[in-house]
Amino acid sequence: MKKGLRRMYLAFLSPVVIAFLIAYLYPVLRTVQMSFFEVSDISAARDTWEFVGLYNYVDLFSRQLFRVSFKNMMLIFLAGGAAVFLISLFFAWVLHKGMFMGNLWRNLIYLPTVITPVAMITVWTQYAYNSRYGLLKTVFEALGLDGMLAYKSTLEYLRREGLVAIADIKRGDIAKTAEMYAKAHLDGEFEADFVTLAPYMGLDSITPYTKYMTEKGKGVFVLCRTSNPGAKDYEYEKLADGRHVYDLVGDKLSAMGKDYMGAHGYSSLGLVIGGTHIEEAKEIRAKYRDSFFLIPGYGAQGGTAEDIAQYLAQGNGGVVNSSRSVLLAYKKQPGTAYAEAAYNECVHMKEAIADACSKL
Image (cartoon, rainbow, N blue to C red; front, side, top):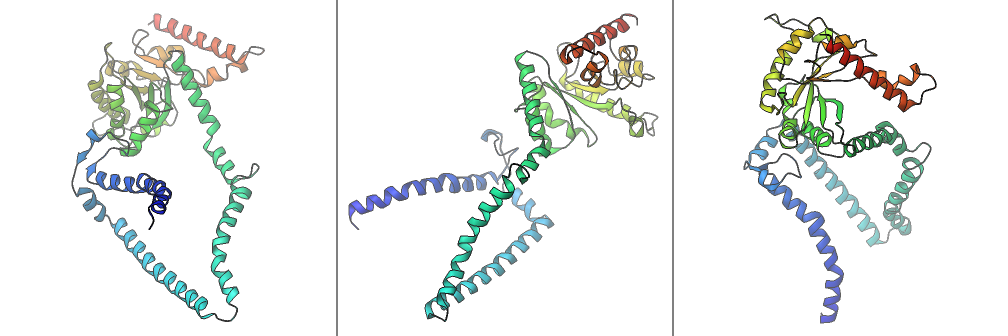
């Protein structure tokens, strides 16, 4: 081969080879390497990997679901491969022998090659991207992307203004899923200062968030004794030792929170304590004196300033949440602009609670 021709071949092939190495071979080799380690997530730093040898493979092959899936995949591969081979052999024989209606057979061979792109173009243009009834339009609407963008913009505004953002997400999953929730809401585009969590699955649904509490100064509020009427369905059930379920939850969370105490005597692991049930308010406040409370229930849910004051420690130790009363304040203030009505309600709530606290 002439030297000039060889250089031309290399010039044309080099981009393809380089792209192959970057886009295919490197990820494969990287995945094989990672398979011998315990890795928290695919983007985890190399120094956080823990070598486990063949454990991941042993664990994988010990799973019944994997074995069945592997068996089915091999059956499909062998049966499909044999079918494709026989069909290809038949058409090769037909074309080679020049059978009757040879042009028809040739067209049939190339027909799938033509049909595939035509079908894809039709599906995407007529059904997926259709502006009126397209599949993607429906999916995007179901996901509420406009709402998520508004939420993201709200968080960005609060950060710019130096205000504290409490994201009422009530997540309650474990392991990798919880890790991804924590990353998204305490370190991602939806970063907040505090998030709310549901502890039903156990304390391991809380631990994925703790690294952000120690490393980034974040905090969590965990559901303990909530403000909704349905709280009595589970939270007020009595245990064998006489405690309520909410006592058990609060005790465990309070003990866990001791490891995340702040400079002002409160833990970064706070409790959601509804302000609508006041019978045990003083007991709860005294019992969890190191826990900062998120107190919902004021206003629309029936909680009064006097009720809320019972859960505070001389006006401290908690933050009061009132959503509907603030958002819908304009309905009670005819002729007042929406933002002004919301502001007025916030001022009224603050003054009412401060006055109730001063009277205790």
